[in-house]
Amino acid sequence: MYRFEWFEQVKLGQGAARVDVATAARVSPVVWGLGFTSLLTDVSAEMVNSTLPVYLVLHLHLSPAQYGVIDGVYNGFAVALLALLAGWLADRHARQKELALAGYGLSTLCKLGLLVAAGWTSLLWIVGLDRAGKGLRTAPRDALISLNTPAGQYAGAFAVHRALDACGSLLGPVAAFVLLAQLPGAFDALWFTSFVVGVLGVAVLWCFVPRPTQALAAAQAVAPLPIAAAPGRWITRRFLVLTGCGALLALATISDGFIYLLLQRRHPAAAGWFPLFYVVTAAACMLLSVPAGRVADRLGRGRIFLLGYAVLALLYAVLLGTGELGLPALIGCLALLGLFNAGTEGVLMAMASAEVPAARRTTGLALIATAIGLAKLLSSVVFGWLWEGQGATVAVSVFIAAMGLAMLAAYRGLEGGKS
Image (cartoon, rainbow, N blue to C red):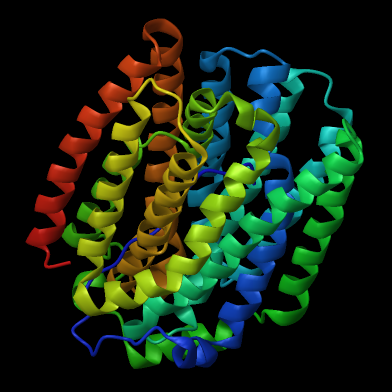
């Protein structure tokens, strides 16, 4: 993954899950297997991702608008292209594991494609194929998590998975930084190493995550489809509200890559340390993900979800400044981004999992992923266009205003449903 994305949830009418060390130890082995798959995949992905924005903009001299197109394809288009197909196939044929394997495998193969990329056009195709792999795997993977977790513990299970995912996001940039420090300019070695680690992630999924046939049958036996959620009628008003809120907020979100580039402009000496920006963000996310899940289960997932976006709005306000940022302030900004990720990434999928019956779980999560992916595509393109045409200050100001309106609409929608 060349990444940039995270969480959401709803009170389930059951006792709040206690997401602590003891609870994490009781999480299904399937969730742990998927978590370690994501950890290794993110090590592989972030080895590439953490060097990509600065490489494209500072070395290939792409304009903000050109980078916005690549970032939009990375974050949205290819994910939206295949997420619905993957969800439909997984639910129809109970092939969540197989679709996840195909997605992880495609993304891993794309690391080899980087070895022969000759220009930004070929790079755009490779990024698109990598994101197509993400589109194939994300909804089936999240469905496997929820299908192997009691409904009252969705937030905890997603939080454990995201914490392992964030650990990979932390280790990947460190590996890239160390490798390039020892072998300056050896990007071919970086791409190949990334491919090898990705293969290990696929192997974990293949060997340690079973197909969901038994879990799906058990889920349907415990919670049979209600009339309102029967085939053809499972898309409820509440589900549409969750989808709309997620897409609206994604539309007003500046991608991580652009945030890192804006921060780097405020601390020019940090250009050589750019990969470590991802490390600080991932470390904050990894440390705060499980506590955020615990608080969300206790206080209401919708509230924590919106608080996460409030933290992001605060970061935007800092980006509006023009003075140079000191190292403590830079680290603080990166930690705020990690806190936002910890408070949002798993929560929406947990809320959606509570709304969609087991037999339609993958399709439902894929619908939300598609809506958010298209919103992120538009967001990246618009932000890059505004930055190039009007300047970074105007672009950030427009997105702050959009975030305020999106949060107001999301608050009314989620509070109306007692999230």
